[in-house]
Image (cartoon, rainbow, N blue to C red; front, side, top):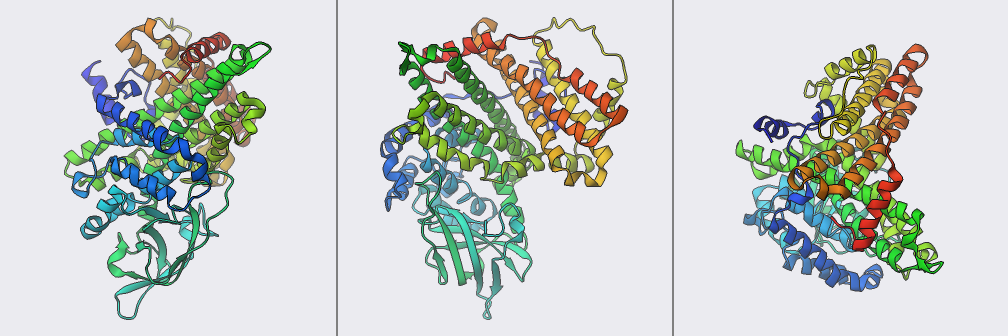
Length: 598
């Protein structure tokens, strides 16, 4: 690989992939894990197998003290402080390693929720926004698991609109405490946590974060909620009645709580995708084993084409999610190191890196959570009637999966954010969308180029992905031009454009992964990966066409509509491909291994 290509990869900014042609620039792939990273991931999976899976029924019954004891055990193995600096009792590992921990612990059902809440929203607000004194007091005990963390943002009447929260905070007459009054709901780990990051409004409008400790005067909690899934995860309401919080427990600046809440969400969205990936692999492996052992008509159901199709499609979606996740994780890791080298402290470095790739984090959250829902749904179907029985773990996976499309901002909010962030960066001059969009419109008026012979390696696939990007630029550019300031009210159009972007980012991530593998191993050793990538691209073309068509028909008419629909057809045209046979080859490999092979 040329130094120019590597340089291009290093400086790629958030959202910039949309206006860059796909090339063989450096990308991080799961096959690049170093030995230590692989060991960390295996340790996480082993922890689930030995400590969590044997007692799932006890966990789901919310046996008192059980979940905190599991968090303690995870702390003893160093799994709570992977990315926390060593000075605060953590391991100080890189971002990719911490993402691997989220994936490795992601197949533990309710335990996965508890551990992710503790290490994420329960710890990171203090680590990244706390004063030196707050970090010294709280982080070492959160890293070890001696204290458990939680996060209080949502209220009965403020979910997605978090800044409309009603909880208030007023300064006491002696100036030593803030008195919190209000209520928080759906608080994960709320029933046993020791430390809570709670948001309230000072003087009626200054949205602010506070560190609240269990036992503070005026702080109580409600009973455990009865939920559809993740039944073993502690979920309660929190109540504050003149709750006395010392002024030194203000987190960050007064009136700047939104900066804490929104920045933590960027990291949380990517980590949720990682956890969903871990959960999907576990559910997939359970389904593979069942298909290989369950017999009907005197043979394993794995022999039937309908089941092979399901197994292959599940593998495709998992593999693609994995490709996009670790591509983005490496970008964040690179940006974090770049900011550290420029003199930024560790907290500003990671937050800045996550903010740079907030667009990609939102897309990963959407795709990861919907991928997991697909996997568990098909897993139940493969199990047939048994999949509906509590005796089979796939039924638990099905119920527990559903919450992920709501966590960390609903998928609808994240789709809208994806496009909103791209447009705002364009308006600020951080992302040049106008030039590429105009070039696409000029191309539409020209005669199509039929001269390419597609002789270069992966030329056809690269052309397809580049055309997908043109479809997005054409559709989004025309929508902005036509709707102008009203575009924010056209949520249906924005979500269709977001889905086009998600499909395209995934397709490019899959292509880059295969290109790198072929370079490392040779084409003959990558037949499974080639089939997966080409199957995804083939199907993504139709999905992008449908999203684009629905968006265009919503805002365009007449000659403009006809021209763009013809352009969309041109930009989503791919070569004929026998996806049935490709899926059969994928299924044969996976069923033969009796597990997800990567």
